[in-house]
Image (tube, rainbow, N blue to C red; front, side, top):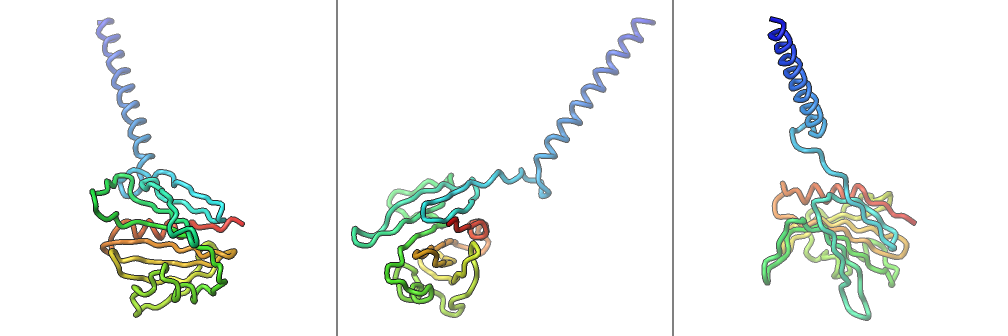
Length: 192
């Protein structure tokens, strides 16, 4: 009978340890979930440049940069595309988020640059909304939407002799890239 009592005690301890482990494991997993039942959003990736701008972006994007234009007139373009995107041979890229940095050599006002420089794509703008005033990184900005290969939200900022043009392309109003574009814009800081 004494052996039976010891066996029962051992079984009881094993059950308590098993339930305790299961409870602690479930608490750990629940702490890793957000309120919608999905996994918490990973930390944002950061970008900072010598042009005096920084921002954060979702880590689901891959950042690339290139120089556009020619020897007389060139500008930097940063592009954020989904990491899982595989470009088709000879096809177009996906809707993306981009930032172009233009030197404002003519010293144009921001609205004169947007409405007069072809690189702004203002001629493709949906004129019913016109230019809207907003702020980005604490700086006055102009926002508009244009239609080309994709629908695109554009926001231009003049800062320290440069024009920063942020663009977010999308196919449908529900596309995640639109929300991610807003996230990027809300994180922009001008650093000098």
